[in-house]
Image 1 (cartoon, each protein chain N blue to C red):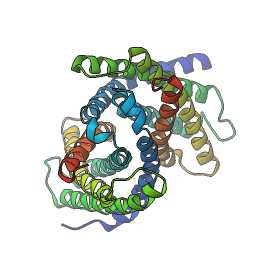
Image 2 (image 1 turned 180 degrees about the vertical axis):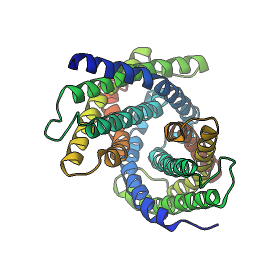
Image 3 (image 1 turned 60 degrees about the vertical axis):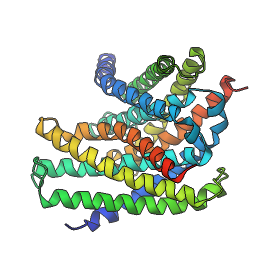
Length: 189
Length: 186
């Protein structure tokens, strides 16, 4: 009996996870090729250092907003027509949260990264500017993605609790890398 | 419009701490610059390896959490058939999808006509990382669920966020070691 149960558990998990994982894999390779094509400005210690910081926080920010929007859609305090004061409040709160988090982490990075021995640009401020600006830019993108995926999932009858997190996480990674490249074009390496 | 202060108060500390964790991942990534320069195409693998591990790990965390709530796993009985089969599923998924990531990374470099390391190197690095990393993270997930249950915390609230940050750090660390061991960079 136990063996049958275990086999059923394994088979259904594998079957249900593979499509989502394959999509995540392909989006990941796309993100990887963008890094590869921009390798002349990406493979530099302080830029590499910034990537997990910017992308990690971006993903969490999107997940938090996505989860809150899903609950409010279920509860009916936000209408699926993309309107209402509550939606505006959520977005404003999300952007504020993004700005505060990225600016404070940018300052911490400027202290922590050189101490930990990451090879720094000649001008340390560049690291701070890169993390703060690409992060804030990414906050807007990620919040837009999670808002649209929450609202559209709900309209198409999908439960946003299941769809928002994976959608935001994989597209957020690509968006994060683009934001970093964009800011690097302006600030220079 | 108004800012929801309670959301800021509750989420900011969490985001800040995960940001500090991401700095450790950044430290490892930043230290890989020579290897990434010497092994063309290697960087293509990295986002998908990190992403896969995050997905597989958080799915395992929530499945083990559910199994705990249903009474299949408890702190007194954590290492049993159910938890072992959940963990072996995660490890099998981790190995097979990592191998696939290595193959797709290689093919995408060939199609775009970009410099790349050999298919063998791509497959060795991705599969070995998937095996070691998948095993480490599965054991870690089970221990987080075990300790959460033991101290009365709901594993659903603790395991996934803790794992997401740990997954980035461990995956990059293991990948770095595997790249060194593979000898792809002399």
